[in-house]
Image 1 (cartoon, one colour):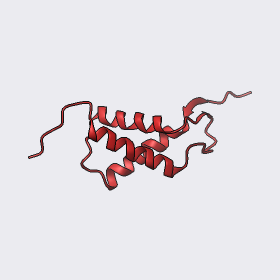
Image 2: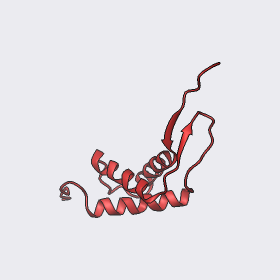
Image 3: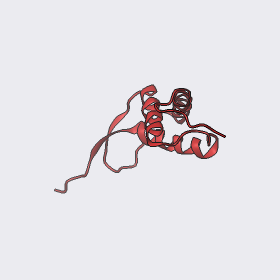
Image 4: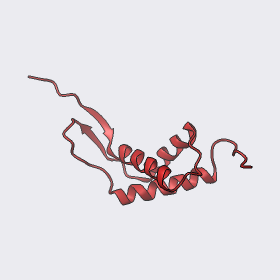
Length: 93
C-alpha cells in the first residue's frame, strides 16, 4: 500500500495570492510591495473570507470561495493597508 502525500490548507490562500498578484500587475502600481504590506494584505483578505480548509492530495479539485468574493476581499484589504500601513509612508517627490 502506498502512502499519499497530503496536507491541510486553506483553499482561499492560493486564490488570494493569485488575485493580489493580478491587482498589483493590472491596476495598483502605487501600492507598497514591502513584505509587511504584502503580508498584511493577504492576512486581511483571508480574514474577510470564510475559511475553506481542505486536505490537499493533488487531485486538482477546487474548494474555495468564488473568485468575485476573493477579488472584493483583496481590493478592500489593499485599500485598508494603503490607508494605514504598518510603517512610515515614503515621501514621493
